[in-house]
Image (cartoon, rainbow, N blue to C red; front, side, top):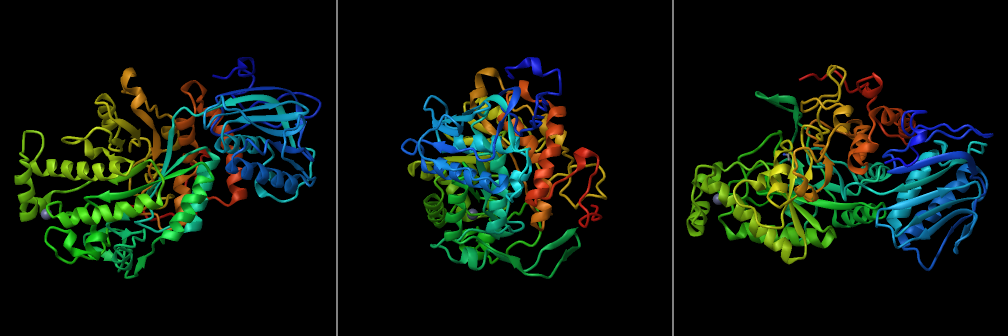
Length: 558
Ligand code: ACM
Ligand code: ZN
């Protein structure tokens, strides 16, 4: 809760203007800190020393502190010298081991800005907060000398509500290159998100180089053409070959870039469904051995991996082994969604496996459903044997799920509630509140074509991750994530438009205690954030300000 409640009635929550000899800047930080009290008076930034304890500060912290000092020098026009021992004046960054790994505190007086954190991530988050308190020109990075380079005297204590604060990216339906992924990570980090769920394999394209299986990218990363709009039947394709993939060197570069922003990348290999690109590369992975083409349309395909054959598991272990080498994440996402059992029902290999395992249909599930449980459990064991844990979409709950799996609730909140009640950890990504591929205004003739749905920013903001979760099971809710599938999103401009500013709302759902959430204060803060987006070259929706639509992309109505 805000500590200085006396300030609250003056202006909606945190947009606080304090009267003093020098006008204090408005404060509009997203996500809003857990506790902030603003006093009268300011700290003058130009020329302030930036100090830290070189022996105690980790490399990530040092890097961000030094970058901050050089940015201040650039924008204020006055050098901010760096000092490698703590000073009583200017900006000081002190290691305080009593704080949590993502926690920080900032005390701003007229003489000093004292930052405390226990890790480089904490210092990075403190710098994100300070940068949102400075004039927007900070983000332009160019010299802009002015008397406006001040910070209001204030006390800030801050830490996240949820440990897992994710955003998902689908470079399979449409591809986004390394620079675009980095730009996505940058805006996530500004909002203190800490997980990128990177969906790297799909029917329409396999996007990560696997040395043991080169055809996955030679063949599986490219499709001959792509469906035009929603012309499923009769099918109309655009006739243009399309594709791309990340080399392992690029993956390492992105993983390191994200880590420096406090973001862990959770890779997803979606199995056993959504695998046509792999089947096109290695037809023996399917039930029939038939050659398929990398899919040119969207939807749920009947062609899936054959769990009757041992060679399928050898393949999955080969792929996941390389994935675990590349990604240090504690969690590996193994998909599990939307896997039709059509082929399994008649496949002699699958039926033999069902018989051997003694799997039987019952009134809730078919023997083939239980066969998917077998796939999940075998892959889970392999992942666990390598010291990692699995996440799967909520379909993995159907039938039997082995202890230690984490469930990603996407078909609404029911999967997350069921998982938590049954002792499984869950990450909430319900399509009722967290599917950023849905339309964000009702004036869809002004909007770029979308998959459907309607998810305006205030609905995202209103999400309560604990709704329906019994109090004693709430510790199983690790956090919240939004998903951004890209069937209808052809390029980065459109991708950012779907992401922003709904990401801002997501960040407050993930970071803020419920008592600190206030849509009016948030909306006011968004005005400034959108000016920052203009400076940084991000595309965003203005629907929340009554201006829906993305000029140049409108008019493709379902
Ligand atoms: C999903 O949206 N198929 C997880
Ligand atoms: Zn089979």
